[in-house]
Length: 413
Ligand SMILES: Nc1ncnc2c1ncn2[C@@H]1O[C@H](COP(=O)(O)OP(=O)(O)OP(=O)(O)O)[C@@H](O)[C@H]1O
Ligand SMILES: [Mg+2]
Image (tube, rainbow, N blue to C red; front, side, top):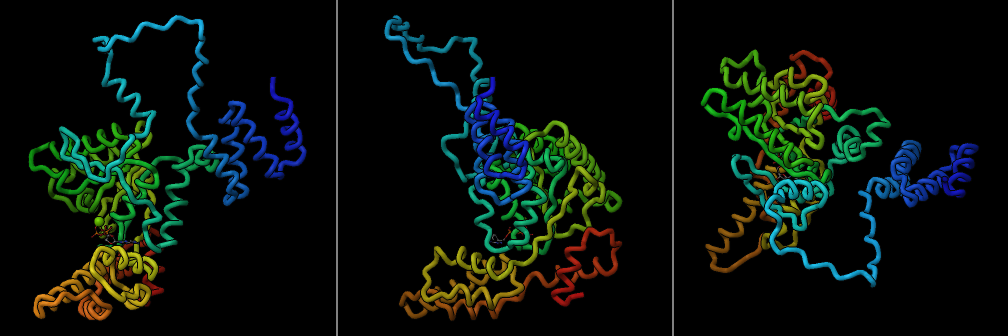
Protein backbone atom coordinates (compact mmCIF):
# COMPACT_ATOMS: atom_id res chain seq x y z
CA UNK A 1 0.00 0.00 0.00
CA UNK A 2 1.28 3.44 -0.92
CA UNK A 3 1.61 6.10 1.74
CA UNK A 4 -1.51 8.31 1.72
CA UNK A 5 0.58 11.49 1.34
CA UNK A 6 2.27 10.09 -1.76
CA UNK A 7 -1.11 9.19 -3.28
CA UNK A 8 -2.49 12.66 -2.54
CA UNK A 9 0.55 14.28 -4.10
CA UNK A 10 0.16 12.16 -7.21
CA UNK A 11 -3.45 13.32 -7.55
CA UNK A 12 -2.47 16.94 -7.00
CA UNK A 13 0.25 16.70 -9.65
CA UNK A 14 -2.13 15.03 -12.09
CA UNK A 15 -4.38 18.07 -11.90
CA UNK A 16 -1.58 20.65 -12.00
CA UNK A 17 1.37 19.03 -13.78
CA UNK A 18 3.36 22.29 -14.02
CA UNK A 19 3.69 22.68 -10.28
CA UNK A 20 7.43 22.13 -9.79
CA UNK A 21 7.53 22.32 -5.96
CA UNK A 22 4.84 19.63 -5.79
CA UNK A 23 6.78 17.37 -8.14
CA UNK A 24 9.95 17.85 -6.13
CA UNK A 25 8.16 17.12 -2.88
CA UNK A 26 6.84 13.88 -4.31
CA UNK A 27 10.36 13.05 -5.49
CA UNK A 28 11.79 13.53 -2.00
CA UNK A 29 9.12 11.32 -0.49
CA UNK A 30 9.78 8.66 -3.08
CA UNK A 31 13.50 8.63 -2.24
CA UNK A 32 12.66 8.26 1.44
CA UNK A 33 10.15 5.52 0.82
CA UNK A 34 12.63 3.50 -1.21
CA UNK A 35 11.57 4.25 -4.79
CA UNK A 36 14.59 6.17 -6.07
CA UNK A 37 14.06 5.10 -9.69
CA UNK A 38 10.78 6.96 -9.93
CA UNK A 39 12.34 9.95 -8.17
CA UNK A 40 15.07 10.01 -10.82
CA UNK A 41 12.60 10.32 -13.66
CA UNK A 42 10.65 12.95 -11.73
CA UNK A 43 13.80 14.99 -11.19
CA UNK A 44 14.77 14.48 -14.82
CA UNK A 45 11.36 15.77 -15.89
CA UNK A 46 11.73 18.88 -13.75
CA UNK A 47 15.26 19.45 -15.04
CA UNK A 48 14.00 19.27 -18.58
CA UNK A 49 11.54 22.07 -17.82
CA UNK A 50 13.87 24.02 -15.55
CA UNK A 51 17.52 23.04 -16.19
CA UNK A 52 18.88 25.36 -13.51
CA UNK A 53 16.60 24.28 -10.71
CA UNK A 54 18.96 23.55 -7.82
CA UNK A 55 16.42 21.56 -5.81
CA UNK A 56 15.85 19.29 -8.78
CA UNK A 57 19.58 18.72 -9.15
CA UNK A 58 19.82 17.97 -5.46
CA UNK A 59 16.94 15.51 -5.75
CA UNK A 60 18.61 13.89 -8.73
CA UNK A 61 21.85 13.33 -6.90
CA UNK A 62 20.04 11.96 -3.84
CA UNK A 63 18.01 9.63 -6.02
CA UNK A 64 21.07 8.46 -7.92
CA UNK A 65 23.14 7.93 -4.78
CA UNK A 66 23.85 4.29 -4.08
CA UNK A 67 21.36 2.80 -1.65
CA UNK A 68 22.77 2.77 1.87
CA UNK A 69 23.15 -0.72 3.25
CA UNK A 70 20.33 -1.58 5.61
CA UNK A 71 21.34 -1.02 9.22
CA UNK A 72 22.21 -4.21 11.08
CA UNK A 73 19.52 -5.39 13.41
CA UNK A 74 20.07 -4.10 16.92
CA UNK A 75 22.04 -6.61 18.94
CA UNK A 76 20.01 -8.96 21.01
CA UNK A 77 21.40 -8.78 24.57
CA UNK A 78 20.28 -12.31 25.31
CA UNK A 79 22.16 -13.80 22.40
CA UNK A 80 25.28 -15.72 23.18
CA UNK A 81 28.56 -14.13 22.16
CA UNK A 82 29.58 -15.69 18.88
CA UNK A 83 32.85 -17.52 18.73
CA UNK A 84 35.64 -15.31 17.33
CA UNK A 85 36.12 -15.66 13.61
CA UNK A 86 39.09 -17.76 12.61
CA UNK A 87 42.12 -15.52 12.08
CA UNK A 88 43.06 -16.94 8.72
CA UNK A 89 40.67 -16.70 5.82
CA UNK A 90 39.34 -20.00 4.59
CA UNK A 91 41.63 -21.18 1.83
CA UNK A 92 38.89 -21.26 -0.80
CA UNK A 93 38.08 -17.58 -0.33
CA UNK A 94 38.69 -15.75 -3.59
CA UNK A 95 40.41 -12.54 -2.54
CA UNK A 96 41.03 -11.20 -5.98
CA UNK A 97 37.38 -11.59 -6.95
CA UNK A 98 36.38 -9.89 -3.72
CA UNK A 99 38.77 -7.07 -4.41
CA UNK A 100 37.23 -6.52 -7.81
CA UNK A 101 33.75 -6.51 -6.23
CA UNK A 102 34.77 -4.04 -3.56
CA UNK A 103 36.59 -1.92 -6.09
CA UNK A 104 33.33 -1.50 -7.96
CA UNK A 105 31.40 -0.46 -4.88
CA UNK A 106 33.80 1.65 -2.90
CA UNK A 107 35.80 4.68 -3.83
CA UNK A 108 39.48 4.28 -3.02
CA UNK A 109 40.41 5.84 0.31
CA UNK A 110 43.33 7.74 -1.10
CA UNK A 111 43.67 9.22 -4.49
CA UNK A 112 47.06 9.73 -5.96
CA UNK A 113 47.80 12.17 -8.71
CA UNK A 114 50.91 10.20 -9.57
CA UNK A 115 50.61 8.11 -12.67
CA UNK A 116 50.94 4.49 -11.81
CA UNK A 117 52.30 2.03 -14.30
CA UNK A 118 50.06 -0.97 -14.48
CA UNK A 119 52.05 -4.17 -14.28
CA UNK A 120 52.31 -6.02 -17.53
CA UNK A 121 51.55 -3.02 -19.69
CA UNK A 122 53.47 0.03 -20.76
CA UNK A 123 50.55 2.37 -20.15
CA UNK A 124 50.33 5.06 -17.52
CA UNK A 125 47.01 5.39 -15.85
CA UNK A 126 46.27 8.15 -13.41
CA UNK A 127 43.50 9.65 -11.38
CA UNK A 128 42.98 13.16 -12.62
CA UNK A 129 43.02 15.84 -9.96
CA UNK A 130 41.89 18.69 -12.15
CA UNK A 131 38.35 19.49 -13.26
CA UNK A 132 36.88 21.98 -15.68
CA UNK A 133 36.96 24.56 -12.89
CA UNK A 134 40.75 24.54 -13.23
CA UNK A 135 40.51 25.38 -16.90
CA UNK A 136 40.58 29.17 -17.00
CA UNK A 137 38.18 31.00 -19.34
CA UNK A 138 37.13 29.08 -22.47
CA UNK A 139 33.48 29.34 -21.46
CA UNK A 140 32.11 28.39 -24.84
CA UNK A 141 34.24 25.24 -25.00
CA UNK A 142 33.10 24.25 -21.54
CA UNK A 143 29.46 24.80 -22.51
CA UNK A 144 29.88 22.66 -25.60
CA UNK A 145 31.65 19.94 -23.67
CA UNK A 146 28.82 19.92 -21.22
CA UNK A 147 26.07 19.70 -23.77
CA UNK A 148 27.81 17.30 -26.14
CA UNK A 149 29.53 15.03 -23.70
CA UNK A 150 29.36 15.52 -19.96
CA UNK A 151 25.73 16.15 -19.11
CA UNK A 152 24.36 13.07 -20.84
CA UNK A 153 27.16 10.91 -19.46
CA UNK A 154 26.91 12.12 -15.91
CA UNK A 155 23.26 11.42 -15.80
CA UNK A 156 22.04 8.15 -17.29
CA UNK A 157 18.40 9.01 -16.75
CA UNK A 158 18.73 12.30 -18.55
CA UNK A 159 20.55 10.50 -21.30
CA UNK A 160 17.54 8.26 -21.80
CA UNK A 161 15.23 11.20 -21.59
CA UNK A 162 16.98 13.17 -24.26
CA UNK A 163 17.59 9.95 -26.18
CA UNK A 164 21.24 10.72 -26.51
CA UNK A 165 23.29 7.62 -26.74
CA UNK A 166 26.53 6.81 -25.05
CA UNK A 167 28.10 5.78 -28.29
CA UNK A 168 30.93 7.66 -29.81
CA UNK A 169 33.82 9.72 -28.66
CA UNK A 170 34.88 13.29 -28.75
CA UNK A 171 37.65 14.67 -30.92
CA UNK A 172 39.34 17.88 -29.88
CA UNK A 173 41.30 19.76 -32.47
CA UNK A 174 43.12 23.03 -32.73
CA UNK A 175 46.53 24.69 -32.75
CA UNK A 176 49.34 23.20 -30.63
CA UNK A 177 49.75 24.09 -26.98
CA UNK A 178 46.25 25.45 -26.46
CA UNK A 179 45.00 23.06 -23.82
CA UNK A 180 43.63 19.95 -25.51
CA UNK A 181 45.49 17.54 -23.25
CA UNK A 182 44.74 19.73 -20.25
CA UNK A 183 41.02 19.69 -21.05
CA UNK A 184 41.05 15.92 -21.58
CA UNK A 185 42.43 15.52 -18.05
CA UNK A 186 39.82 17.91 -16.72
CA UNK A 187 37.06 15.86 -18.35
CA UNK A 188 38.33 12.73 -16.62
CA UNK A 189 38.32 14.66 -13.34
CA UNK A 190 34.79 15.87 -13.99
CA UNK A 191 33.58 12.30 -14.57
CA UNK A 192 35.50 10.96 -11.58
CA UNK A 193 37.19 8.62 -14.02
CA UNK A 194 40.72 7.40 -14.38
CA UNK A 195 42.81 8.84 -17.17
CA UNK A 196 44.66 6.66 -19.62
CA UNK A 197 46.69 8.62 -22.13
CA UNK A 198 47.76 6.71 -25.20
CA UNK A 199 50.38 8.19 -27.49
CA UNK A 200 51.95 7.07 -30.70
CA UNK A 201 55.00 5.65 -28.95
CA UNK A 202 52.84 3.49 -26.66
CA UNK A 203 51.25 1.82 -29.65
CA UNK A 204 53.62 1.58 -32.57
CA UNK A 205 55.81 -1.47 -32.67
CA UNK A 206 57.79 -2.68 -35.66
CA UNK A 207 56.91 -6.31 -34.94
CA UNK A 208 54.04 -7.43 -37.12
CA UNK A 209 50.77 -7.51 -35.20
CA UNK A 210 52.14 -5.91 -32.05
CA UNK A 211 50.70 -2.47 -32.70
CA UNK A 212 47.20 -3.90 -33.05
CA UNK A 213 47.73 -5.90 -29.89
CA UNK A 214 48.81 -2.71 -28.08
CA UNK A 215 45.63 -0.91 -29.14
CA UNK A 216 43.61 -3.85 -27.88
CA UNK A 217 45.48 -3.89 -24.57
CA UNK A 218 44.88 -0.18 -24.05
CA UNK A 219 41.13 -0.75 -24.37
CA UNK A 220 41.26 -3.84 -22.16
CA UNK A 221 43.01 -1.82 -19.49
CA UNK A 222 40.44 0.97 -19.75
CA UNK A 223 37.62 -1.60 -19.41
CA UNK A 224 39.25 -3.09 -16.33
CA UNK A 225 39.76 0.32 -14.77
CA UNK A 226 36.34 1.72 -15.71
CA UNK A 227 35.16 4.40 -15.24
CA UNK A 228 38.06 5.46 -17.37
CA UNK A 229 38.78 8.08 -19.99
CA UNK A 230 40.98 6.70 -22.72
CA UNK A 231 42.70 9.57 -24.48
CA UNK A 232 44.37 9.21 -27.85
CA UNK A 233 46.84 12.02 -28.24
CA UNK A 234 47.92 12.87 -31.79
CA UNK A 235 45.24 10.65 -33.24
CA UNK A 236 46.18 11.89 -36.72
CA UNK A 237 49.43 9.96 -36.47
CA UNK A 238 47.77 6.80 -35.17
CA UNK A 239 44.64 6.91 -37.22
CA UNK A 240 46.05 8.31 -40.43
CA UNK A 241 43.92 8.25 -43.54
CA UNK A 242 44.36 4.72 -44.73
CA UNK A 243 44.62 5.91 -48.30
CA UNK A 244 47.76 7.85 -47.31
CA UNK A 245 49.45 5.02 -45.52
CA UNK A 246 51.70 2.74 -47.45
CA UNK A 247 52.80 1.40 -44.11
CA UNK A 248 50.67 -1.65 -43.52
CA UNK A 249 51.36 -1.72 -39.77
CA UNK A 250 49.68 1.66 -39.48
CA UNK A 251 46.74 0.47 -41.56
CA UNK A 252 46.26 -2.43 -39.17
CA UNK A 253 46.32 0.01 -36.25
CA UNK A 254 43.52 2.08 -37.77
CA UNK A 255 41.47 -1.06 -38.33
CA UNK A 256 42.04 -2.24 -34.78
CA UNK A 257 41.08 1.19 -33.46
CA UNK A 258 37.85 1.01 -35.46
CA UNK A 259 37.06 -2.43 -34.07
CA UNK A 260 37.65 -1.31 -30.49
CA UNK A 261 35.63 1.87 -30.93
CA UNK A 262 32.70 -0.10 -32.24
CA UNK A 263 33.13 -2.43 -29.28
CA UNK A 264 32.90 0.48 -26.90
CA UNK A 265 29.33 0.92 -27.99
CA UNK A 266 28.16 -2.50 -26.87
CA UNK A 267 30.32 -3.67 -24.03
CA UNK A 268 32.36 -0.86 -22.64
CA UNK A 269 30.12 0.79 -20.09
CA UNK A 270 32.19 3.40 -18.30
CA UNK A 271 34.87 3.76 -20.98
CA UNK A 272 34.90 7.24 -22.46
CA UNK A 273 36.92 7.84 -25.56
CA UNK A 274 38.61 11.16 -26.25
CA UNK A 275 41.15 12.11 -28.85
CA UNK A 276 43.13 15.17 -29.80
CA UNK A 277 44.84 16.29 -32.93
CA UNK A 278 46.45 19.33 -34.52
CA UNK A 279 45.70 17.91 -37.97
CA UNK A 280 42.07 16.78 -38.05
CA UNK A 281 42.23 16.77 -41.87
CA UNK A 282 44.71 13.88 -41.71
CA UNK A 283 42.51 11.69 -39.54
CA UNK A 284 41.00 8.73 -41.35
CA UNK A 285 37.40 9.66 -42.21
CA UNK A 286 36.29 6.20 -41.09
CA UNK A 287 37.20 7.26 -37.55
CA UNK A 288 34.83 10.20 -37.81
CA UNK A 289 31.69 8.19 -38.65
CA UNK A 290 28.72 8.09 -36.26
CA UNK A 291 29.42 6.06 -33.17
CA UNK A 292 33.16 6.70 -33.45
CA UNK A 293 34.70 10.16 -33.06
CA UNK A 294 31.49 11.78 -34.14
CA UNK A 295 31.65 14.98 -32.12
CA UNK A 296 34.36 17.56 -32.56
CA UNK A 297 35.30 20.48 -30.38
CA UNK A 298 37.64 23.19 -31.61
CA UNK A 299 40.11 24.26 -28.93
CA UNK A 300 41.30 27.71 -29.87
CA UNK A 301 44.11 29.87 -28.48
CA UNK A 302 43.19 30.86 -24.92
CA UNK A 303 40.98 33.89 -24.38
CA UNK A 304 41.91 36.70 -22.00
CA UNK A 305 40.52 35.00 -18.91
CA UNK A 306 42.27 31.76 -19.81
CA UNK A 307 45.55 33.60 -20.40
CA UNK A 308 45.27 35.20 -17.00
CA UNK A 309 44.94 31.83 -15.32
CA UNK A 310 47.78 30.39 -17.39
CA UNK A 311 50.06 33.25 -16.31
CA UNK A 312 49.00 32.74 -12.71
CA UNK A 313 49.71 29.04 -12.96
CA UNK A 314 53.20 29.49 -14.36
CA UNK A 315 54.24 32.33 -12.05
CA UNK A 316 52.74 31.14 -8.80
CA UNK A 317 55.74 29.19 -7.61
CA UNK A 318 58.35 31.62 -8.84
CA UNK A 319 59.84 34.55 -6.92
CA UNK A 320 57.81 37.43 -8.37
CA UNK A 321 56.85 40.94 -7.33
CA UNK A 322 54.36 43.48 -8.62
CA UNK A 323 52.94 41.28 -11.36
CA UNK A 324 49.70 42.55 -12.89
CA UNK A 325 48.09 39.43 -14.28
CA UNK A 326 45.23 41.26 -15.97
CA UNK A 327 47.61 43.52 -17.91
CA UNK A 328 49.65 40.51 -19.01
CA UNK A 329 46.52 38.70 -20.15
CA UNK A 330 45.49 41.74 -22.19
CA UNK A 331 48.81 42.08 -23.94
CA UNK A 332 49.28 38.43 -24.88
CA UNK A 333 46.49 37.88 -27.39
CA UNK A 334 47.20 35.07 -29.84
CA UNK A 335 49.68 33.26 -27.60
CA UNK A 336 49.04 29.63 -26.76
CA UNK A 337 49.29 28.13 -23.29
CA UNK A 338 52.66 26.70 -24.23
CA UNK A 339 53.84 30.14 -25.48
CA UNK A 340 52.86 31.68 -22.15
CA UNK A 341 54.75 28.99 -20.28
CA UNK A 342 57.77 29.91 -22.39
CA UNK A 343 57.35 33.66 -21.67
CA UNK A 344 57.39 32.96 -17.94
CA UNK A 345 60.49 30.84 -18.38
CA UNK A 346 62.30 33.61 -20.25
CA UNK A 347 61.28 36.21 -17.66
CA UNK A 348 62.63 34.00 -14.88
CA UNK A 349 65.89 33.57 -16.77
CA UNK A 350 66.32 37.33 -17.13
CA UNK A 351 65.96 37.84 -13.39
CA UNK A 352 68.31 34.97 -12.70
CA UNK A 353 71.02 36.23 -15.07
CA UNK A 354 70.83 39.69 -13.52
CA UNK A 355 71.13 38.22 -10.06
CA UNK A 356 74.13 36.17 -11.11
CA UNK A 357 75.81 39.19 -12.70
CA UNK A 358 75.29 41.60 -9.83
CA UNK A 359 75.58 39.04 -7.08
CA UNK A 360 72.37 40.42 -5.63
CA UNK A 361 69.18 38.40 -5.70
CA UNK A 362 66.32 40.11 -7.45
CA UNK A 363 62.74 39.05 -8.01
CA UNK A 364 60.96 38.62 -11.34
CA UNK A 365 59.24 41.90 -12.19
CA UNK A 366 56.58 43.03 -14.59
CA UNK A 367 59.36 44.46 -16.75
CA UNK A 368 60.94 41.01 -17.17
CA UNK A 369 57.67 39.53 -18.32
CA UNK A 370 56.78 42.32 -20.74
CA UNK A 371 60.27 42.14 -22.27
CA UNK A 372 59.89 38.38 -22.62
CA UNK A 373 56.50 38.92 -24.24
CA UNK A 374 58.15 41.05 -26.92
CA UNK A 375 60.52 38.25 -27.77
CA UNK A 376 58.00 35.52 -28.51
CA UNK A 377 55.93 35.19 -31.63
CA UNK A 378 52.68 33.26 -31.37
CA UNK A 379 53.29 29.65 -32.29
CA UNK A 380 49.68 29.35 -33.43
CA UNK A 381 50.15 31.51 -36.55
CA UNK A 382 51.42 28.79 -38.85
CA UNK A 383 48.67 26.43 -37.72
CA UNK A 384 46.04 29.05 -38.46
CA UNK A 385 47.56 29.57 -41.92
CA UNK A 386 47.37 25.89 -42.78
CA UNK A 387 43.86 25.70 -41.34
CA UNK A 388 42.92 28.56 -43.63
CA UNK A 389 44.07 26.57 -46.65
CA UNK A 390 42.06 23.56 -45.61
CA UNK A 391 38.95 25.62 -45.07
CA UNK A 392 39.41 27.44 -48.38
CA UNK A 393 40.45 24.55 -50.59
CA UNK A 394 39.42 21.34 -48.83
CA UNK A 395 36.02 19.67 -49.28
CA UNK A 396 33.50 21.31 -47.05
CA UNK A 397 31.27 18.73 -45.45
CA UNK A 398 30.41 20.98 -42.54
CA UNK A 399 33.14 19.58 -40.29
CA UNK A 400 35.01 22.84 -39.99
CA UNK A 401 32.15 25.30 -39.66
CA UNK A 402 33.33 26.36 -36.22
CA UNK A 403 36.87 26.89 -37.50
CA UNK A 404 35.58 28.86 -40.47
CA UNK A 405 33.60 31.18 -38.22
CA UNK A 406 36.64 31.76 -36.05
CA UNK A 407 38.94 32.48 -38.99
CA UNK A 408 36.42 34.92 -40.43
CA UNK A 409 36.09 36.71 -37.12
CA UNK A 410 39.86 36.89 -36.76
CA UNK A 411 39.96 38.31 -40.33
CA UNK A 412 42.11 35.46 -41.54
CA UNK A 413 39.75 34.35 -44.24
N1 LIG B 1 42.44 27.37 -20.12
C1 LIG B 1 43.58 27.05 -19.50
N2 LIG B 1 43.70 27.24 -18.18
C2 LIG B 1 44.84 26.94 -17.55
N3 LIG B 1 45.92 26.43 -18.15
C3 LIG B 1 45.86 26.20 -19.47
C4 LIG B 1 44.69 26.48 -20.22
N4 LIG B 1 44.91 26.17 -21.50
C5 LIG B 1 46.16 25.69 -21.57
N5 LIG B 1 46.75 25.71 -20.35
C6 LIG B 1 48.13 25.35 -20.07
O1 LIG B 1 48.84 25.30 -21.29
C7 LIG B 1 49.66 24.16 -21.35
C8 LIG B 1 49.57 23.58 -22.74
O2 LIG B 1 48.35 22.91 -22.89
P1 LIG B 1 48.24 21.42 -23.48
O3 LIG B 1 49.50 20.67 -23.32
O4 LIG B 1 47.00 20.85 -22.95
O5 LIG B 1 48.05 21.80 -25.02
P2 LIG B 1 47.73 20.84 -26.23
O6 LIG B 1 46.64 21.53 -27.00
O7 LIG B 1 47.51 19.47 -25.78
O8 LIG B 1 49.07 20.95 -27.06
P3 LIG B 1 49.69 19.95 -28.14
O9 LIG B 1 48.87 20.15 -29.37
O10 LIG B 1 51.07 20.48 -28.28
O11 LIG B 1 49.59 18.59 -27.58
C9 LIG B 1 49.18 23.21 -20.27
O12 LIG B 1 50.24 22.80 -19.51
C10 LIG B 1 48.26 24.02 -19.39
O13 LIG B 1 48.87 24.23 -18.13
MG1 LIG C 1 48.62 17.70 -26.06
